[in-house]
Amino acid sequence: MAILPIDSERYGSKNIRRIFDEVRRLEYQLRVEGAVAQAQGAHGIIPKSAALEIKKKAVIRYVSIKDWKEEESRVRHETAALVEVLSNSCSESTKPWIHYSLTSNDILDTSMSLQMQDAIEIIDGYILTILKVLKQKAKKYRTLPSVGRTHGQHASVMTFGLKFASWLAEFGRHSARLEEVRSRVLVCKTLGVIGTGSVMGVNALAVQKSTAKLLGLSPVLGATQIVPRDLYAEVTFLVALIGSSLDKIAVELRNLQRTEIGEVEEPFEKGQIGSSAVPSKRNPAGCERVSSLARLLRAFPEIELGNIPLWHERDLSNSANERFVIPMAFILLDEMLTSMINILKRLEVNEKVIQDNINISGGKIFSEFVLDRLIKKGVARSKAHTLLREVTWESINQKISFDDALRKSKNIKPFLKDSEIRAVLDPKKCLGASTQIIDEIIHSVEKTCHV
Image 1: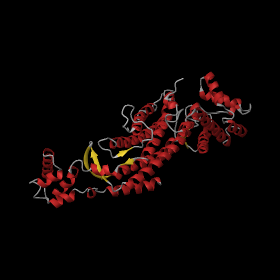
Image 2 (image 1 turned 135 degrees about the vertical axis):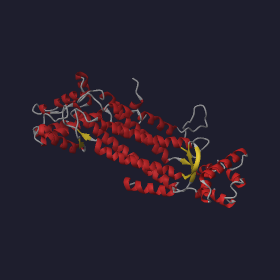
Image 3 (image 1 turned 120 degrees about the vertical axis):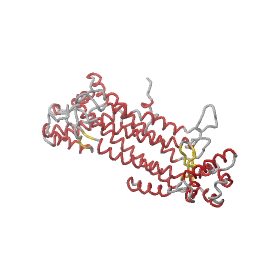
Image 4 (image 1 turned 90 degrees about the vertical axis):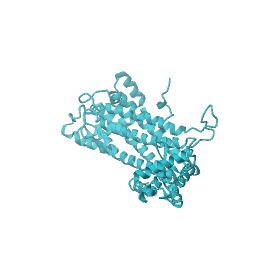
């Protein structure tokens, strides 16, 4: 039988995959059944003896995956199958109180919250690692002058560390977003068939609150038969958002690895093959894989957004796709994060090439600073801009450097001496507030994310 890539061990760590495997999924659902019974027993909804037995028997030891699947194939309903198999392990006096007052999605949605809780914990750990790596890189290259590019062209001078610092700030925001999602999305729902707690009546909210506390979740604030899907859409969007930030880093590193630029190189293992046809190639395959998976992640929020408007208090049009979307989103993000952590930790940075690339334009990269000098000499901005465009064309047509063209220009000489021109063409004096920005970002992330 063919195995889909997501079902193999190709993507995602064992820890993240285990959260969404069938055995663990059953364990989560049993845990919810046990917690609800415990809460109902404490509030006098069901006999305490029944609550204790349900809590004790709602484990894999008494409810096997094999029995569950066999019963499900017979009744064609996974929650009814779960209740039946659990019931078979309990005494006659306890059987009436199993799954009391609950509907299927009380169990399914609350157990999904537990799955997402554990998955978010893993993702948060990876983000903490990325923050530490980016902070280290930002500090290491804090004062290294490098080319800043816009539209793929040399624009001005920046420090190479500022690239890492900007990513550091972005992932600091992701860390904050994950914390917000924990409190808002990880909810418990035990309010029955249309979300009114009908059978439990006035005690329904107390039971839900107690169950939520037992499970480490928050009680849902308003629900139909299911937890509102705007919550699932939010967490799926956040996963895609983090994935897009990883893609952002990957695209930049891929570009910096181009043969014509050559400023960095992602790790290349001994014995690794870059191309079956060209033995010398070392392709940025890791970064390209991150970019590829990001495209898939960005499709998931659209699916989950479509799950928000359901018919009346419930329909099943969300159910099938969520079995794919939620687990796949977390598993693929896990893969992307671990890949990028490996790439960033072992990234080869060619400092000499970075500094040499500043001079590729023959000094044109400093035109912004020459413009500033002319303005400070009293030249109108529009006139100074025109003069420097003319000098640029002269340097191109005469095949000379920009600084030579500046010194030869009759229009520039009245305003700038050769010594002033040379002073402008020093990359270390053209970094603006780069180092201050880096320091501010590091300080902010250290304070908010404790890295």
